[in-house]
Length: 259
View (tube, rainbow, N blue to C red):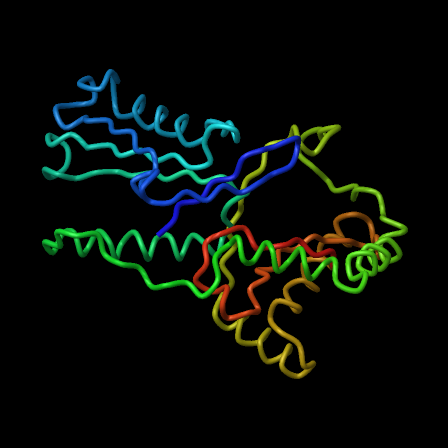
């Protein structure tokens, strides 16, 4: 099994694939032993420890040095049962996407359960029909084939020739001048089961998916909040894994589509 990383070379992102003999097949793991109390690792309290863990996770990556980091915290035995740990794994978005999270967690849990059951040798994960390097080569060849890239660029240039200005939404604070400087967060919304069932029936009647129905509702909400704007462009992620050979591959395959 090979390990992968991405580095920048002459302002371009390149992939470097290491043989297990070179890396030992491991990723960097930092260990904080707080089993004798928070102060045993230099923290004054649980609050300080949680803040430090958050700082460890949120630290920006130096893409020329690392793309993955992990942390294992052994929790105090006076608070929880012995041998209880908290683990975080931070991976740069350049080398993984949301789909990859399920794959990584599944592989990690499979390996952990085998180790806990007494396995002495590392378990062998299923052979992948396609590695990320194969996917990257295929994608580049596909884009260069028959002027496909130029066709796509021309198509989207025409579709987005007139891009409406940012919506004038009723914010509770001044809007940032640049999108890169604003803080982002997620707001989960749970819909009642009856509403979801009714939406599914409505979408079926119109031969569309629930995603299309929700997107229509979201755009309608944006239009009402912005004073009736009708020309809207919403970016939505697409998994990009229509090929079944990509289903178990870890890597950043997703793309953003303008709707």
